[in-house]
Image: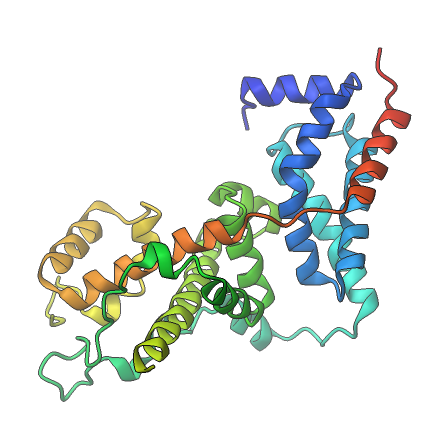
Length: 215
Length: 85
């Protein structure tokens, strides 16, 4: 992958011991790294340690970084490796199974419950039976503490892969390519995971709106 | 909206929304989806809700900071490992 000029300059600065450049990188990336780390670890304290260990690994490994992915992707990969190892050590892991993996990837989940569409016998099969209703003032109402809580809970309830993808893509603003490289999933898989995850968060927000409408 | 031939049903459309928002649909499908949205209020509301969801998720990503202690430890480690000059 060709490196953008500013990334090459950043790498050179880091390698030559430019503390300001490193400080800026730490401040830019740490919030996102912490968020991902917290998804794999039982406590915030452990997540902080994972972030710290990640930066130490970056400091020690920067000379060996070959630039085949973006610097950001490389750092996220290091974090995921450390976080998964720590997470596994600290809680019992479930046995891997094909079905669990499929469920995690959400290949056979529907974005919207099938009951909300008309069946074969309906006037318009596959058309809405219970269509969504436009959200009023979403800019205001989705920014409330309550709505944020609804989203956080929906994300927490997602299978791990979906949670990782939506966190990286939407909360942290990684590109599709950066996210799929960091997570080592295919382009298609990345989009499927993102789609399932976003669909569930939308559904949670829709329920939140519906409940509010009843009050 | 019905599912006859090249037309998309609402149930099919909701599965394409992420590809649509990511700009990853092939032109024929994107055209079919746009045509559907012109005529279907339910799907229009759905796509808009997905857009709003993504916007809301972005703002959710702000504001989680590592502790000053961790930050300092990391910066110190850098200076120690890579003395400038």
